[in-house]
Amino acid sequence: MGAGSSILGQSGQEGLRCASPSPTDVMRVKLLAELRHEKSLDPNAKDVEDHHAEVIRLRSWLRDVDGILTRMVGEAADQAAGIFEDKGSNLPESRSELEDGTVIFMREDGYRRQEDTDGVIIHSWPDGRKKQVHPTGREQETLPDNTRITRTEDGKIITKRPDGSKYQVNPDGTTISVTKDGIVEQYNPSDIDGTTTQINESDGSKICVFPDGTKIDTDAAGVRIVKYPGKDQYRIQRNPNGTTIETWGSTGRKVQTRADKIQTSPSGEVIEQMPDGTCRKVAGSYIAVQCHMCQTISSVQRASYLVSCRMCRNILLTHKSHVEEGRKTLSKSEEELDGEILEIFQHYDKNHSSSIDRSELGALLSDLQIPHDNFEQLFVEKDANKSEALEWEEFESFFKAVLLDVAASGQASSVQITNDILREQRSAIEAETKSAEARQRELEAKARLGDTAASTEMEEQQTLLRKLKAEYEQKTAQLQHAKEAKRKMQREALKRKKMERDAMRSPK
Image (cartoon, rainbow, N blue to C red; front, top):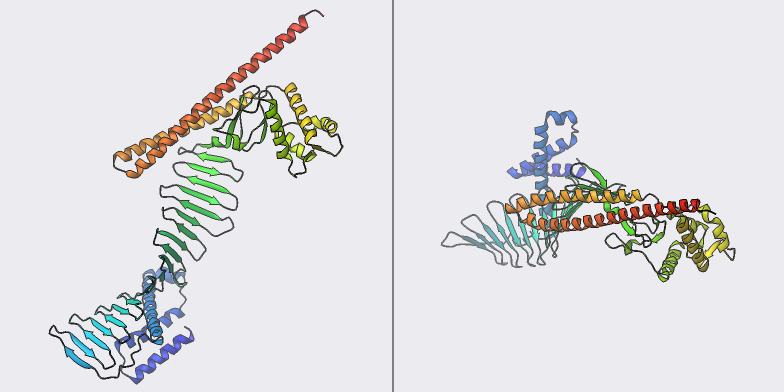
């Protein structure tokens, strides 16, 4: 124990030699001596294992000691501030007794003390200060500025100020402060666990910070977010309905768990795990676009900007912002096509030089899955000023030539891929619908038993089911369009072969 503790011990012993010790003095000296002894020990793991019950008792005893010392320190501070100073304590007192047995003592300086028959003592001072002491040990004091100080039987000190703020000191050293606006902040000293808690009583929101940096935010709706320290910036959100959302801020990975699990990778790919353990990519990662030339429905990634029709190789411009309900019909008129070519020019002009250089053109051809070498000669021809870049007029001429070349050499490629993707999406919607219907039946059973929360969620499930039904019908229509396009392609292929055979048979 430090020097301050030794001085306290010596002064206490000197006081015992000079005067008859009171029971309280004896207890204080004994507690301080035992406290010094306990603090000097360094228990090992075996001690804790062999004397687990004793360790628990010791911790409880140390908390009691801390409460006593905290109260002593508080009283010393109050005395230093003049709160307990009674300058007229040596003045003579007059005594009077009422019929009910109440005794009243008064002094000429205005001090008054009332001792009731139930043991309650009430002190009054001329400056307006009052103090009420109960036999149980509870004390209530009112200062001249109307500040109220309460000392409870279990050692708590509660100070309430006229502006509505409050400050509380607990025996274990925990302090709780409440501002006039209702913000509650709780602090646990480092010798306990160092936790700080802030509560807004107006809406019930709460913030709790632990010594290791862990932070728990609870909002008024009951949503609980736990943020853990560390480079991965991990946090977990728990909603009142049981949904949990885990987020790794350093990578962008997110996992949502309820009846099923949804995981989002940093690249944006979404994988959903169904209650039965089945994993699938969420259909929302793709959109469906329709070619204005052959009417073929193609499923492409949502982030795609420029794509080529799988059927006729026509070049399609598709913006995520322009897609409505997963489908967009592309331009048909020449004027609209010119507008789209200008839009493509502006999109791929990454350095804003008002021209498309070789690297930017390479990115465009890569998006269309066209080999760069196929149009190298065309690039040289259209680059009239030999600047190694295509200005707007040059690019417009180049791009229209690409459109004609692709359309002329286009082959109906991999239509089956589109069919497969649409079938997968429709199957995924079917599985999601079955899961939603099962959940709806559970909620209906709970609602019949009077569960109001279930009734609210039932409305959400019904909305979800309607949406799933519409998506299923849409995917069915898109799949039918793809099948018709495939049959059209087959008919045209047979027609071309027949024309070729007829040409070969016809006399020259």
